[in-house]
Image (cartoon, protein in one colour):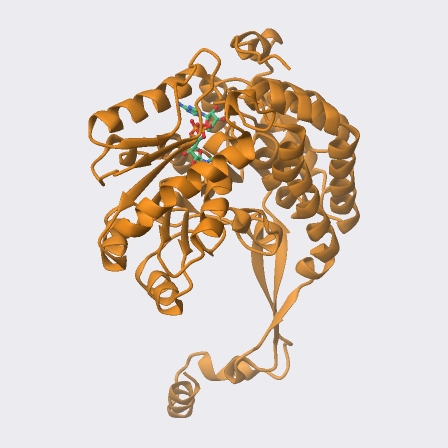
Length: 477
Ligand code: NAD
């Protein structure tokens, strides 16, 4: 299938006369205000409609993902559509239980009384998504947003224009109370001026700062799903060929454009060297001798990003890194080959920013202590991986580093389990979602107290504070 290299999105996303953001938000908010979203039946119906959207249009969605990112239909199923269907299934199964008012204990001083927590919808939620998993990262948050009884405005990324166009067309046809606004940063800026009740932003730290500043104007709470450099520690106690297999896979899914991809490897020098041929072999096993010809290897989202990666590799080589595998990039075709760099130092250009592409640096370090010091010297990563059979090493990594999540012997999967909250910490994000965590994130947990008027047990805390009441007050608290 030929790659579409022209920036067709420039035309597509600006062709229709755009409805002002204020009008869109107002419309969606009015739908919320009708109260229609509150019953469980509406929420379950929306989830069912979402299943219908995904299953009835899977072919069209897969074609759009192929045009945007050269994703193979199987990878699209695994990492976008299938994983969403799982998230919906899990949510649908448990939603009634999650929404049930939660009784909490009442301290003796307040008896007789009953207390509970009731989840109420926030209102209208703005979801701003990136281009790398343009379906999963737009509709994934929406599962929780709708399950929690909210309405939503969705802003897909302009850099995955085919997918944005398909979703803009399909979503209003299937879902109630959900609008899609397409366009670039100007449209996002316009949306951010409107008052909404929560913002879910997935993307990079630079734009996250813009989003958070805009949210501050209205005191709107935010969930920020960001990225960063996720390290992977590998030591000699592990099965190195098996570790290399998992690492090469984790790095190269979606051509490395995965927020939780292992960004770089930290390993003692002998392990670092042993990994080189093993990684090369695994890459060849997955994508053949010429990955450009593989139907299963993705493309970089834009030629600008491809040029950034090409520059990052050449500058790192100039700074002393050695290319183990990888060849010439074809920037115009948005192709960057799977690339392994050895002898990488912490001050190499490839270590200066999140790679977000199919380039895997191996950074030799003297020992685990040095690896931990390196990880702690940077921003808290979204994920930390370790390939080791040593429980002591695992315990140290858990205790001495902080990250959004940890994967022992496996990358990526923590991000697709609906039973686990997904999110970062520090610079890799604020808040978490997926499954029950989504329903909690997009609801207000409202404390409700019921206390009978009689017996009048509050007499002790009411003035006048006579001697008896003074003594009682001190015994009470
Ligand atoms: P990005 O920050 O460039 O853009 C994301 C969204 O912000 C897009 O919808 C875009 O239209 C909008 N935007 C861009 N510039 C804007 C501006 N000036 N004002 C307002 N809105 C603007 O992110 P990206 O390049 O699409 O995605 C890559 C980043 O996202 C990486 O850092 C990656 O790690 C991170 N990411 C995180 C997760 C996660 O779940 N934690 C998932 C995927 C990607």
